[in-house]
Image 1 (spheres, chains in turn orange, cyan):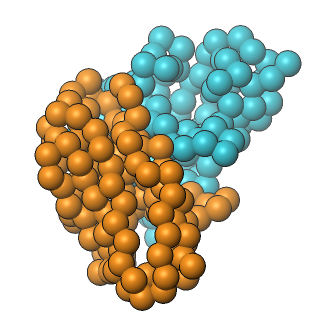
Image 2 (cartoon, helix red, strand yellow):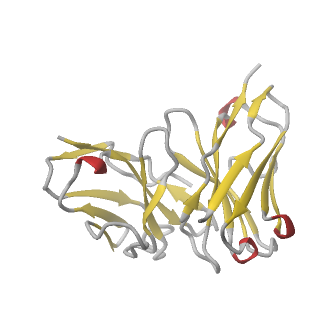
Length: 110
Length: 120
């Protein structure tokens, strides 16, 4: 199962909005509404930010939102803050009864 | 509070074995699906294995199938990963991660991770 495709890096200024894409196939992202997004700060464990394409867990800021169109899922962060600087990973359930992650995107807040 | 604490990592020679444990607290362990996810140094996340709440359904990534065995003891609130025939490419931080209650494919709580280093 090949990794999902994410941009290696994105950047934005405080207050701006950014979107991170996550492209898979009809065997994973496109075939199921089981896309999740995780935030990971250096040296820390990942944190769930979005589940099931667009569900935001309790405690996660409403500045984070998720969506999907075809084989591509997206994470949008609005009103960028310095604390949002981190690595972001998408994941999806697959037709092979497995989970595949994206390669990760490093978000820099300028 | 939900807590997941991994243990059992360390240095092992290629071809060797290691057993990781994850002790859970703060929730009804027997009701939740559990997973192992690993991260090689400086690399991204890689899903390793899944086990259903009862232990009756198990899945593995192709990279560990036939070498790793996931199991759980609901009476002890514990998750395990038996790793055999270890290779250099298995070197990673191994995270225990909680799933949902029924065929949910997100990981809402993670442990702090335990480092496994495979080297001679």
